[in-house]
Length: 256
Ligand SMILES: Nc1ncnc2c1ncn2[C@@H]1O[C@H](COP(=O)(O)OP(=O)(O)OP(=O)(O)O)[C@@H](O)[C@H]1O
Image (tube, rainbow, N blue to C red; front, top):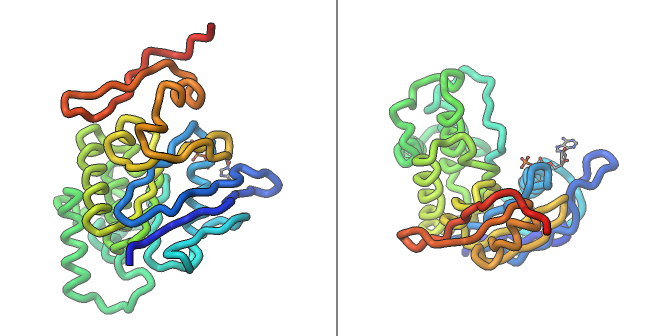
């Protein structure tokens, strides 16, 4: 069965302050990548924490048309903050993530999956380094390995490439897209770089000031009007030599 995720009227409140309200999506399906975009402090991370079951709030989060998000075991969440406070090695931390909530005995299959994920993210050369010895980008790749190794069906990634160099961003996002397709994973990822959104996502959800203002196919949503209304910049969409759409920014919005 293909995994599905659907949000109905989902909100988040910290104390007495509503930071997110009324987020309703179509059914997001395995095999698809949905990008969540919007300005700083719009409510994107709060939405991810709410879907992952780390925050309470109004609304309905439906996984596979039944279980609520928090309870479904195949929902994996990678937070924005990947700082660590442990002496584990990369390999140990990824193996531990794999065994989370499962019987303790480590099988050959577990070891093979850890190897496969480290290799796919090209972090196998640092497998036996301590987590506290890594660069910011390496730490982010390890965090990604920790969720991929659990073989999720719903994958929630909060800015998974923010610390990566350009080559690694393109490579990792291509990997995420191909895993989504091959393993029918429903991927939802927050990301600021609209050009990467245009490359990786099927659908884009725009959050602005705690409200979902738009949700649809990437090229229908990422338009000069969005650049003006949400990001206050003048820009246009053009195609690169491989025909992938790209955002060209002309400058800050010039008010008439
Ligand atoms: N633990 C918290 N307690 C109170 N308010 C919070 C908490 N976490 C976030 N907020 C507030 O909620 C709002 C949304 O924050 P959130 O982190 O969800 O934004 P975001 O869209 O992910 O931003 P960014 O793009 O900067 O990461 C902000 O006004 C923020 O100050």
